[in-house]
Length: 151
Image (cartoon, rainbow, N blue to C red; front, side):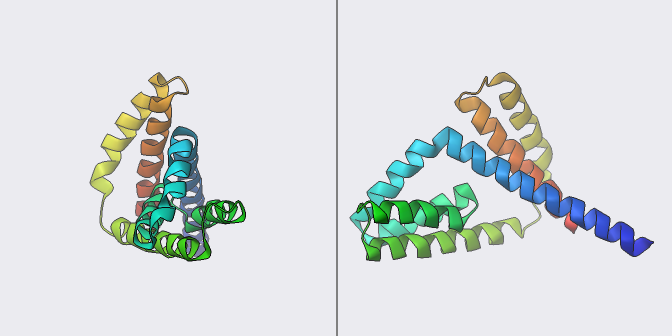
């Protein structure tokens, strides 16, 4: 019986984690999607800059796969060369790895503040930039909560 409860709790925490990551990604995409696309287009100025932009985008989107899909779209459109696309993807992988390292620390003390600020911004934002910022903060707080539940 204890094993069944453990598995149910673990499945619930994993579901919360997946939903929270999706919530953050949607908030970033809807609130700052145009700025991210412009940054990805400008990353074609150099390989090192492309890797940096890829790392930042992957940390914001919490998905190196999302950066890969965007980069593939730009590569088929001729905006990015193969070398710049590879630099962008390697940077995205680096950004994902850095985010995992950051989340391995005990950041549960941030959770109440993020929930409060995110909730206030979401409830008062009216689908604008503040709404999406609140959604991002709520998602980060829920990620921290799900990681604590998994522990």
